[in-house]
Image (cartoon, rainbow, N blue to C red):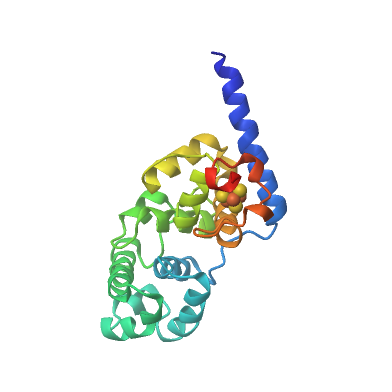
Length: 218
Ligand code: SF4
């Protein structure tokens, strides 16, 4: 078997998918509203299992009440729960936000760390959140795997991985590092606006030719 041909084909395929998605979604970017890395961190924690639109509505009011890591570190948890209630999972999310804020104040002088390992070391911050903050706030080459990235990566044959970490590793292998952040946004946009979970709009899909989802071929 000629491995060089296989690798070349995979690279061509990945490039073809990304360029088609980039043409389709030229404005693909983070849709969470924030004005500093800490606000982005809070917004990303809130966005789990919630739409960015809802998070933006909530944070508009939330950041008027609590602004800095110090504010959140000292927040009354019941008041915080009330303010973020509509984002869902409000108990876990409020605990995560307060824990991360206390860590930021106690260990990082009140500033969100700008490297992945320190971000991941914050209590309440998982791999997806750390990757989004690194990529969006600090311009790092990172791929965050959320539910859209996970689903679309499977359908487009980038990964058969069972966990977000498996998919993250497969995407990092398939794509050039300088494309990781953009790919993250493009896959989210495609999942959000076309390759939806229940009813993917395959007839409108600009990357249907690359799709491995058998249901899309019916
Ligand atoms: S053809 Fe359908 S299932 Fe495949 S990537 Fe496009 S929208 Fe998703």
